[in-house]
Structure formats: C-alpha cells, structure tokens
Length: 511
Image (cartoon, rainbow, N blue to C red; front, side, top):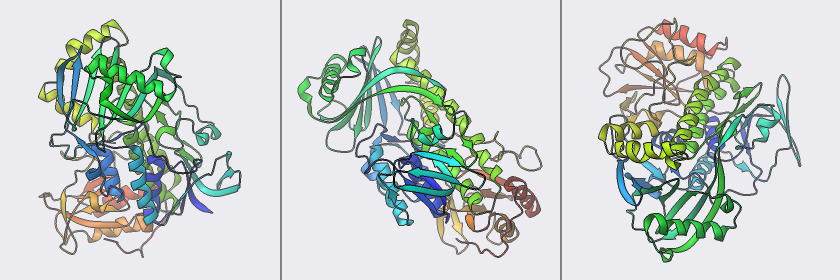
C-alpha cells in the first residue's frame, strides 16, 4: 500500500511528490491524461516559485531557458504611461521573474521525480475515492489503489475534491479571455511585457522562450468565446493593430490558441480526513499578477514536509491541520488581490477606468510603488507568523529580528565539515539548525533528531552573517520554526508542535 497517492501531474502534484519522495515516503502520482501537456496557460515563475524548485532540486537550467523580465510597460490610449521595473534586485528579492511555459516547469519536475525513483502513471482516470479510518481507496477503470493518504492536485474540476464532498464556492470575475502563442516581429524589447489599455479593452503581450515567440491575451467579446482557433488568432491580431498599430503581417505563425473564463473560488477546507487538496483543486483565481502556479508550488512545499512527518510516524495527524491554517489565508488574499487587479485593469466601470488611467498607472512610475509591487508579486513577503506554528512555546513574542513563521533569507553558510553552501540548498528534504559557532549544535541537534526522526534529516550550518548568540531551527520550506538559546526549550517546542510520543534517538544526522 502506498503511503500517499497524488492525483494530478501538474506543477503542484509533481512538486508535492518530489518533496515526499525526497523524504523517503512511498508516493504514487497518477494523471488521467495519456501524456504530458506541451502547452499551458501559466507562463511564469515568480522568485518564490523559483526558490521552491531550487529547494526541491528541480530548478536545473530553467533560468537559462526562460526569459528574464526586467520591465512591464503600460500604454493608455496608445501612449506609454508607465514603465514598471520588475527585474531590479532589492533587499528582499534577488531573483528575476522568469517567463516560460508551465510545460517546461512540469518537465523539470518530472525529471527530478524520476531521479528520486518515481514515474508518473499516465492514463489513470480517477472514478471514485472512498476513505475509512485507516486508508483511502482510489478506484480506476483498471483497478484500485489503497493508500494511507490521498492529495487532490487535479485542478479546478477536481474529482478528488468532489468525492470528498468539499464545497468550492465562488464567482466568475470576467466571463472569458482569449489566449494565443504566436511567432511575431513585435516592436517590443524581448525582456519586456507590454500592456495596452483603452476604455474597457486591454491587450497583453508576454515574451516566451524561442525566436520571436509571444503570448497574447485579451478579454473576449461575447461572440468570440466559442470561436475556433483561427478566429481567436484573428481577433488577437486585430487587437494588435488597434492597440499597438501593428500590421497583421507581423504575426508569422500561430502556435496555440485557447479561451478561458476567470473564476474566483476557494475550497471550504483543504482537508477532510485522509484526503487533502492543493493548487487549483483548492483555489482558482485570475492569472493577472502571475500568482497561480507559484501559489500551488508553495502549497506543495508546505504540505510535503508535514505529510512526510505524519506518514513516517514522527508527528500526529494534527500537524496536517497547520497546512490549511497557513496556506488558506494566503490563497484568500491572492484571490482578493488578483480579482481587484483584474477588474481595475480591464476597467469594467467608468470609475474604474478613470482611477486606472489617471491614478494607478501614473503611480507605477514611482520607485517606492515599483518596489512595493515587485516585492509583493514575488511572494517572498509571505509569512506564517499568525499560524499555529508561528508562536514559540510558551506563547510569547520573540525578540527583535526573525519571528517564527518568517521566511529565512538564502544566506551563505558553512557546513560542519568546513565547506561552504547556501541555506536553501540544504533544505527541501531537510531541516537546518543554524548555530552561532561550529561547536554549539550538539544538544540542539540531539533534540531535533529525537523528534523529527528519519522523515526529515537535520543539517547543521553556521551562517556567515550570523553574529548572533541564538540557534535557529529552519523548516524544509525555508521558514523559521524556532529560535532560542536553550536546547530544553527546543525539546518542549518540538514535542508541543509535533504532538507525538514517537522518538528516534538512534537516527544519525545527514548533512
């Protein structure tokens, strides 16, 4: 019997499976498609998404094969009105945003998953899911799979979510959008996204890897929504002429077209017994801001280390409830912000268009506003301070500095053997103890090993920028779990948070 079955081999499901497999959990990944997708609507990695792939060992050469975006140029009534710099490093953000097809991200994750000994099982269409007190039974045309846990990463129409009886309330934000990937000679720098706004219409052009390849996106008129592919391409080409003054001849090849409706939906719960949800199965929202795939990847990373501890017997099932407690508020915030952004950009009311053209767009030229937008969209400001793992035991605020639940920056560190590394390179399937000096980790390491056991090994590191006297325990997803100066306090914190009597005193540290 598998420990975990992941339904859906998109970015979320693959990232979750990578995290579980790296932690030594027996995992199977099934997908109803007969083969991997070669096209996709999602087209970008925010810095947070790239971090997740990096920690999972799946980033590989994606940065070299993607388009690094440095600016978003917004035109109003044909005139460039704002030049939003999004590629400049800030104190928080060190990575650029990367434009690429979701299919490339999935391919990198499948490669990493295969390295971990797991292959996607294609052509397995889920028929039903039934759970009892000890396991989940998933039925397919060719038979059944029994598993201790099942995770639905099977998208907006998730059969796992429906089988679990979890509501998915929401509304349509915009009726329909048109998409097309084209090869075109556009008068736009290859490191720039261009957006044109005119009354209640808009057009976006996004560079993609490949010689002159662009993604075009625009709201659909009612009659365009059900049009065939050539009509979709024709309408987008027409809008290029209206908004950018480009003749139809600039588009030399149409590679792919699609239509979609923007919804705003959030699952009533992320867990029902032994069934959990992640990614689009748990939340869907507007693609404006490029948050969708990245939010799903962060769901997967958050769930992976918790489910690994539970599956390996190092934590009680209650730890899984912290997944929803930490991630669902993030999804709610993303749904609200992307819906508001969509309505404003599209200009669905006269007041919205006035605010857009005369207030919001001009403000985008101001450096403080640019930094705020870039850092917010990067998802690196996300923290879990208010979640159930965010307050140290006993309940009190930490001293000035990092608090439990904060993302810990990817600082340079020294391993126990004297070699150098980066903090996030040591995470993914491991926890990290950051200690002030190389000879200080022993009592803390013993406590961490005693509670975490084999599900997540612990590596000890000395940050090169430390200069502090306290010890920090960093979670596999790069967030601070605990900090302090007492190994006994760490012991108490772990016992309280993991809520299990299982001990692993004989496990050795893996660095």
